[in-house]
Amino acid sequence: MKIEIRDYTSNDALQIKTIFAEFVEYHSKLDNCFCKIDTHCEKFIEFIEMNISKNNDHVAVAEFNSKIVGYCISKIEHKPPIYPTPTYGYIDNLGVLNECQRQGAGSLLLTDSIDWFKKNGIKRVECFAATSNIKSTNFWRKMGFNVYMEQMYLNL
Image (cartoon, rainbow, N blue to C red):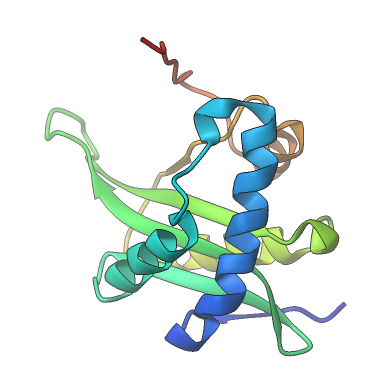
């Protein structure tokens, strides 16, 4: 499978919606805290379109045979200046079609993102991974990520 990584364009929106809808459906079955509003796909594309206009954001897609099979949204973020290195990279969202997982698209997207971070002088990259999604947490560990904090919630 020859997967190409390239920058997102607005022409990719329809295919990205399909991947994101699958992503949301999968996670919603794991935990209802991942349930989204009815217009989540449209809002997600608006979010992407807003982000690609910023210099501190990078959106890449994985393409195979003219079909988008994955995407990655990367951002340069800032912590309070109390940290020695407050600027860091953040993987906001990485999704790959279920039928195309474990074929290298996620790894290629992450490599592209890391290269973009390095080009921008970033020394640390963070992401959130759903602890209920074993495939996801295994992927991030395989890619060299370590858990340093656990995000918790309380429904009221």
